[in-house]
Image 1 (cartoon, rainbow, N blue to C red):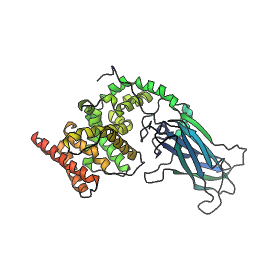
Image 2 (image 1 turned 60 degrees about the vertical axis):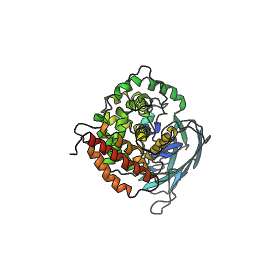
Image 3 (image 1 turned 180 degrees about the vertical axis):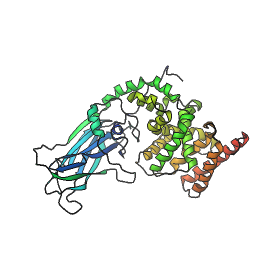
Image 4 (image 1 turned 30 degrees about the horizontal axis):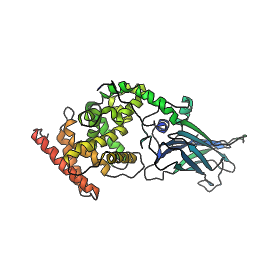
Length: 432
C-alpha cells in the first residue's frame, strides 16, 4: 500500500480532555467531564478551585448546568463555612467544544483544620436536538494537534488530580476532596467569580484535519511495522488488563484470541479480507492523528504504540472485521453493516465505563474471530493448538452458565472450535 492517491481522511475530533487528565474521564453519553480541586491543601481564608473540564461529544450546541454541594460540618461535627460565588452555574457549549470551568472556594472561620473535606458537583446537560451526531468515540480518541491555550495553561491543568469513577457509580455527581492546614492566614480582599474558558472549538478542526492529512505517508510507513511479531504479545497483556478493569476478567485463551483478532486487524487482515482497506480503518486515521500530535511516536516500540495509542480504535476495527471473518462460517445472521457498527460502538461505550459489562462483548465477534484467524497469527514457536485447548477449557466453564443470546454465541463457538481443530489435524500440526 502506498500513500499515492490517499483518501481524504475525516478524523474524529481529538480527545482534548484525555490529553489533560491522562485518560481519566467521567462519561455521560453526549458529554464527558473530569473534576478535581487545586491545590488539594489550603489554609483558612485562602482559596482553592474546583476545576471541571467539559468535553462535548456531539455536533450540536449544548446547555450545561453545574451545581455544587458543600459540606456544612466536618468529620467531628464542627461547623464548616465555605465561601463560593454561585452554587448553580449555567453555560453554553458549541458543537464539539472543550472547556474548563473554575469555581473558587474559600474556607472561612469558624472552620477547623482537617482532611478530606468533600465537594460534590452535579452536572446536567441538554443537547439542542436528539439527533446529534457523535464527533468523538466513547473512549475519547486521538490527542489534539491544535489547542487554543498556551502550554503553560495546559501544564497547569495537568497538575490537577482528577477524580476517577467506576462504571457502577453515578456519573452525574462527582466528588473530590481537599484539606485545610492548621495555619490561618489573614483575610485578603477578593472578588470570587467562576470562570469558563474554551480550550478547543470545532473551528480548530480545519487545521487539525490538514495536519492529520499531511501525516498519511508517515502513517503508511509506520503501519508496516505493526506486525504479529511486534504487537501480539503486548496486546495479550493489554486485553487482559483492560477487560478486567471493566468487569470482564478473561481466561488465558480468551485474551489470546482477542489479541489475535486485533493483531490480524493491525497486521494484514484489512488487506486480505474483501471490502476492507487500511486507510479507511479507524486505527489508521487515529495513527495519523497521533503522529500529527507527536512525531516522536515514530521512534516508539511498535507494541507500545499499539497499546498506548491504537488500542481502542483497533478494537473497534477488530469487531467489524471479526463479524466479516466469522459470517461465512456460521448459519446465524450477524446483522448488516449499520448494526455491526452500532454494536462496536456499544462495546467501546462499555470500555469507556458508561454501561455494565456483558460477556457477549468478549466472544462476539472477538474471541470467535480469534478462533478463525488463529492459524494466520502465529509467531515462531507458537503452537496454534495451545490457544484452542485453552479456549476449549474456558468454553466448558462458560457454556454451563449461558442464557439468552449467549446460548447462540456459545453454539457458534463450539462449532468454530470444532472446525479449527479439524483444520489443524488436516494440516498435521501436532499438539506439543
